[in-house]
Length: 174
Image (cartoon, rainbow, N blue to C red; front, side):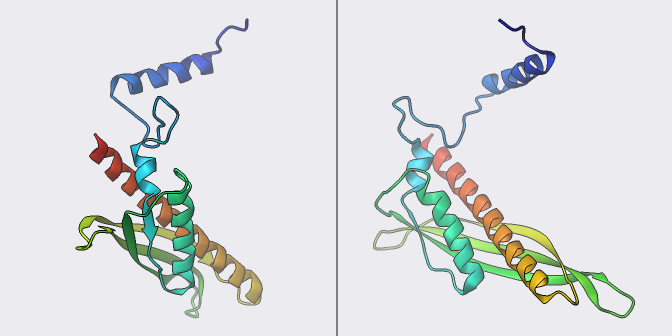
């Protein structure tokens, strides 16, 4: 058998403090192999329609993360998201043309129960930033880069919302 390398030993020693601090993965499975409480609850969230193409990208990213967590489940919650992206020029030339734009995506979200009173469960905000270079002569390259940046922003915001929801459900489960 091969002796443990120095890197392997340091990796194992780095995990030891986590065992003593009570660290538990949010998406952990139960002893029977079933999804844990956070994953089960995430699968019961229905994402309400979000307007515009940017909103469609965010909704799709959220659905992939939430529904993929545990499979099919009956919706018990509605997730409403107000999502927008703003841009500002950050690389400005002496002739006042900008060659780069910072895109800032913001999302305010609310989780409501699907009961007659639409009980407020939790809410939060998410934010992400991307920079897009502007090419004066290459319209298609600039357009493609802008589309890719918008998709990356939607994925980052979806990750933040999903993590916040998972932490909420994990804490509520005890």
